[in-house]
Amino acid sequence: MTDTSTNDLLARLAGQGSSADPGSWAAVAASQPHHASAAADAAGTTGDDKLDQFLNRIQGLVSAGNRKGESVTPVSPPTPQDEFVPIEPSSFLDAQLTTSSVEALILKLLLSRGDCIGRQIADHIKLPFRLVDELLREMKSDQLVVHKGSAAMNDYLYQLTDMGRERARRMADHCTYFGSAPVSLKDYIAAVVAQSLTRQHPTIGDLQRAFSDLLINPRMLRRLGPAINSGRGLFLFGAPGNGKTSIAERVTQAFGQYIWIPRAIGVDGEIIRLYDPNAHEELPLEPGSGLLEQGQIDKRWVRIRRPTIIVGGELTMDNLEVTLNTSTGISESPVQLKSNCGTLVIDDFGRQRMHTDELLNRWIVPLEKRQDFLNLANGKKIEVPFDQLVIFSTNLEPKDLVDDAFLRRIPYKIEVTDPTEEEFRDLFKMMAPKLGFEYNDEVVSYVIKTGYHAVGRPMRCCQPRDLLMQVRNLCLYESRPLELTTDAMDFAVENYFAVL
Image 1 (spheres, rainbow, N blue to C red):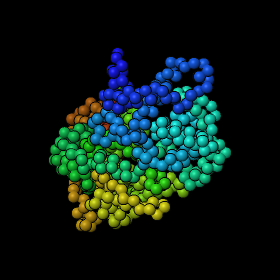
Image 2: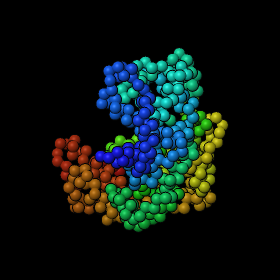
Image 3: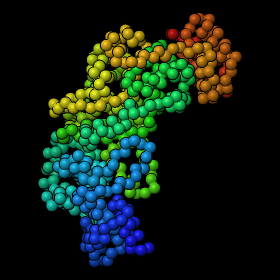
Image 4: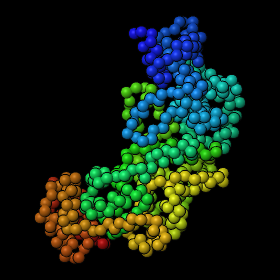
């Protein structure tokens, strides 16, 4: 391989284009690693040390190029199908962070852990090691940390000094948070705009895929399609048991599959935790073809399935505001912020502990303007996106719950009606094999005649599944094969409709 081709390869690895400046590479070759071990100097340089030095030199050249304002060709992101991919910051300024805020995270982490390797610190606060390593050396010069020992890959084991421990305690008194470095509110808003539901336009095929496990008639699907495309809000109303909640849960699947959200948002020193494992499903990137591709992702962000947040009768006004944990100093984001770029389902609307007027007055402007205002504990008011499909699911009549002004802001009102007899049979056909039964049309006809037509009972979408579950449990109790019989169905109907 010629010298020119070698320089071209190194230039591409460093993100400098197709050719390299020989003077730049000569400067890199003459430079020393950040951490030179005295023991390694005495024993000679091994193959691993040479690799470490090579990687450090490449990182040094990239950092130097960034500081001089030179253009760096980014590596193609590993998920090109995603419209938004957070790219690793090249400096604290690029990450919208101050050295003091990052230093505070490191001090509180070491106060909690006792000691930690430099790369473990960088992994914990989700920042590039080259940035954290430089800051750690400055903290050592300021006598906040000391080297307790050496570690692999030219790293050290760090420990707090007495001065560092005292400063960490003072910082922990204000806020105990020492997790992922926060993302700025400005960057979060830009990410929501890039991944907004208004940029998604689900088609008939998308809806059919999302509702493939439910029996939805074409008329209902045609009414749902435009409502979902609007990305604004809709009422699902009708008798209980017809699948309003099941429909609402699957609406999100008609949109794009993934979005990126920050683990935490920083606003003037306040930490707002956004990523919630109880509400969000993390979808880590699959191992890519190269280490540098994975390294391009800003680890302060997490890729999740487009969220579906469901709240019911437990919803209160506190859930709609930023709440501060006074013992930790960490704020929790409200449900509407957690559901951005996804779906927020208000289940059993009208049965919340707060009056419906309170909820409607709180959201009447955000629903129209798609912007919300939140109050922080320090008195600051921030403007955030209100970018989700809000679904109000209720078995009450909407006009009895809200006034005309609010109904105007919810442009779609869809009634989930009772199934027809043919759809009722189809539900039995769908559920029977899932529960281990062979479908028997004679038995189903018998149930419809005696359990419904004879007594004028309305059919509900949930009843085929519930009746089959009754029969299944009876068969398991009596240790007999799973089989649909008229006697078993009579038993199930008697139990299920005892008080209905």
